[in-house]
Image 1 (cartoon, rainbow, N blue to C red):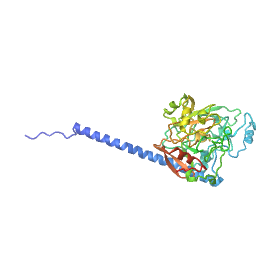
Image 2 (tube, rainbow, N blue to C red):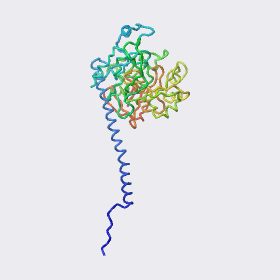
Image 3 (cartoon, helix red, strand yellow):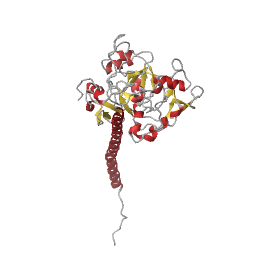
Image 4 (tube, rainbow, N blue to C red):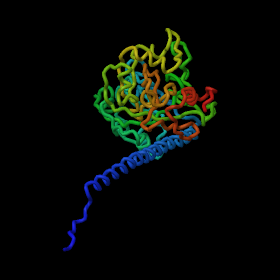
Length: 387
C-alpha cells in the first residue's frame, strides 16, 4: 500500500513565525526610513537657509549693507498724501505701515524674481496699526506659498486663514476689508541676545540695557564691518515653527506649554511688562529665562498665533527671533509687549535646528546649547566667547 501524500503547506506555527519576523523587520525598518526622510528634510531646510545666505551677501554687494526691517528710505508723508490721507497726525501713514520683512527684501536676490516683482516696497504694506489689513496691491503676494520660506519638516497648512484681513480696493478711504489667507514662513532673522527693541537707538524708559544688538532690527543697515564678533560667530537667521492660525482664550503659562503648538504661540502682556523686567520699576535687566517664566506664571494672558504666519511682515512677532530663549525651549514661549518682547527660535527637527551665520554658513545647533553661547552668537559686537 502506497504511503498517503499530504498537500504541502505552511503549518500554523510556521506562519506565525513568518509574520513575527516580518513584524520585527518592519519595526526595525520604519525608524530607519523615517530617519532618512527627516535627514533629507533637514538637508532641504539647510539649503533654504543657504539660499538666504547667498541672497544676503548679494544684497550687501548691491547696497553695502544688509537689509533692515521696515520702511527704509521711503518719504512716508509724501506717500500718505498721494493716497488721499493726511501727511501727519490722525489717519496718516506711519512707519508701521511699511513693515516689510527682511525675507521679502531678499527675494530679488534669489531665484524668485517673479514674486519679488509683485512687491512695491515704496507703497505701504498695510493701513492702520499693524497688522490691521493688507493693502490691495499685495493681495496676490501675501497668499503665495514659497518653498524657500518653508521648512519641509513643518507640516502646517500651506495657507493660514482667519488671522489677517485685506482691503478689497486700492482706495483705503472707501474700500472695505475682507478676510484673507496668508502664506506662512519658517525662517526668521536674528535681532540680538535680549529683548527685541523698536531700534538700536530707542531707549526703554531712559534705559539702554536692552538695546537691540543683533544684525537686524527696525531700519537697520549694518555692513560687514559692523560685525566685530566675526561673521562666522554671528547668527543671521534661524527657524521658527509656523502658527496654525487658531485663536486661543486666556491661558496661564502652564496651559500654553502643555499645548501641542506651544512654540508657535505668543503671550501678549497687554499693558504690563512686569515679567520682562525682573525687578522694580526702572530696573529692566532680565537675568535669565527662569525669572521670566516665574513672572509669566503669575496670571493668565491673551494668546496670539501670529508666529511665522506671514513671511512678508517685518514685525518681530512674525519674522524675527532673539537669542534670549534657547532653541526649542519648553520653559517659556515667545512674549510680546507692543512689539517689544522676546521671540524664540524653534523647529520640528529632532534635537535642534538650523542656523544661518553671517558668513553664509549653515550649522545644525542642538537644543542643549548653553545659553551664554547662544546669546553670544546673537550679537554683532558683544566681544563674547561664542564657541
